[in-house]
Length: 279
Image (tube, rainbow, N blue to C red; front, side, top):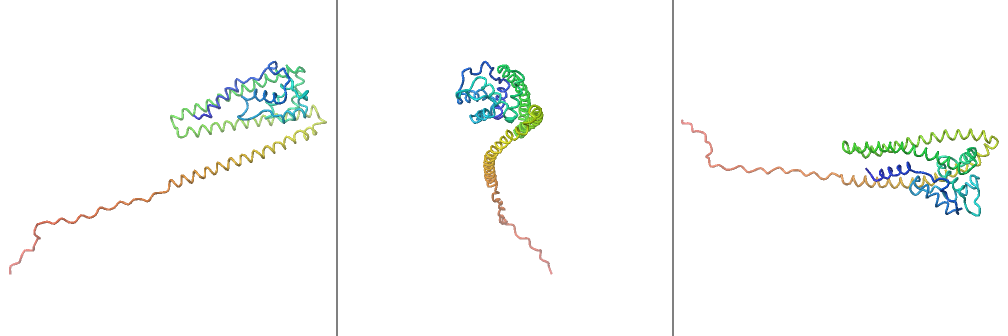
């Protein structure tokens, strides 16, 4: 079993035990932008992909511009703003900026007290994330267990079956996430129409379109990188195939020489003569 599987299992264990900081544990001293980024990216590092930053200054400025959080006072962010930014970071991979703004507006009905509001959200996030991570961890353990059994029974198929098993399980999770997002989007559209019927079209054009354009720009960069990586893999595969073909060129077949005929041995016996006929 490869190192990457061990790393995956370790990551799942960390996600199962992951817990967001309580409201009282958030910084009570107001922080500058760089301090906010360092703190939040550190808090969310265990639920982030390797090298991924959950929050940047560009994102923070956009959330302020969209009035999802209050403007900083003297370039400093409060405990309340930091709590909102953590919540936004956790949800932004699956929720558009327009829908995030709507959800933040809806939470005002839960409580006007920011501490209670943050605790309510973090409790939901923790319970749902932990429960799903536990289920996924069990499924991964099943796949790895099958791999270990196959290592003794049919080792030549074990590695391929492990990769395919993990890949198809990830595909299932992705389809499930897409289905949940699709349903969530339609429900939020209905909620938006009920809350802001006059501004619905304006919000859709002002907030959803920029998101689409941003995704297109990101997609263009990703396509370029993926194209370069796949092109490199293709060249390496072609070179490997060419090398293998060269090694398999048939060597000239050596023909066995027939043994030379041995000369007939001479004998001292007199040659047989025909008997003479008497006249």
